[in-house]
Image 1 (cartoon, rainbow, N blue to C red):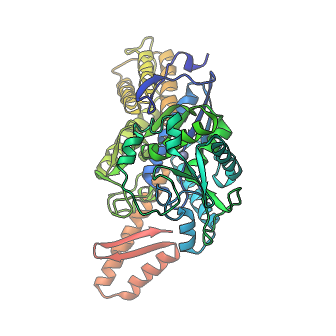
Image 2: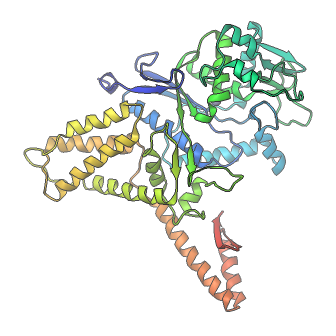
Image 3: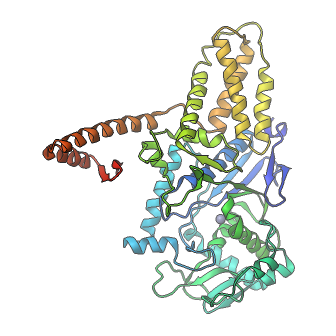
Length: 493
Ligand SMILES: [Zn+2]
């Protein structure tokens, strides 16, 4: 019998703002869509946390015995710099600045995204569709919305008519916003586009002559609006009604609100049963932003190559750190927090490594089945990984007592304990025993730091031949030194 029949999962549904019993539309099957990255730059750590939350959710649903079709898209067109349909396409802009093809930008950052996710031990989604691969489907949806009267065409662009839609449906039900408030809060700006109302959003944008990413359509050459791709791809692969739609909190409005509106306008029904939103990651108590420098890339953590860190941390330690917070809570990353997580992670791994060798006795001194159920209870309560981890450490405490001969464990209970620890730690939390990536990079940073020190000594002694030799030979190995007032740092290319 599948576990999901006895382990009843509850999820927090953003649409109803309540925790609900999870009952998929088709018993035993789950359709899940998660908004993927816009591939115009290296994936940042905050995005990794969002995708990791859904990787954990995907893993737990599979663990419960569900057959899950997990669709996570790649946004490779249509995402403008500004949520109000203004500005350049993010990918086109990068291509223009670097004087390369948009698809080169897409390829480079899709590969980077996959590399980072692989280091974090993500499971690949079942389907990873791209926006540019689904232009025809997007055009078809626009035609349907136009036919139903919820969109209008102006000068080669098509806009969604939010007012018209709101007469028959409810715009704002996911984010809890009222259209009247949205209207009264909007200043009348000088018309920068042809929209009838500022709340309306683009389904199709006319491509200006200089716009490089463009496709033919019944309304002329253009490109699809960002919100539309998710409606097109989720409908194509999961149907008009599916179980879970996930994404970061910041996507709730306008992106997800617009997805609901597009689906309801085209086929008359609400597309998603459970909306799940993952919260953000802050750095040293502040929002991460490239512009303020309060920012860190995943690879900088794995190499320790960032001023806020005292050392490198392995992807498994970072993963463990992220799993110690509930996915709907804000999580703050700092050097101290990572150091603490590393200790906890090592304690957990040491206990697991010693599990097989545990001596068994005729009886057990603690209730292993009860402990296992507590782990399930935690996960069944909207994927509460911090409580799960607390229970796993309760198991670690017992494992250590048994090792010291202070508690006893029966053979049968030992088997349950091995299965429980393995199931939750490796299958559900997605942790790995290997810590090599962190260790290798730790060794590398140690060696480079030593060479930097020798170079500084050479420079202090005015031995520039030696200091230049160190710099040049490191550069030949792909390690760049960078001198600044604060000292010398390095990067690996
Ligand atoms: Zn989306």
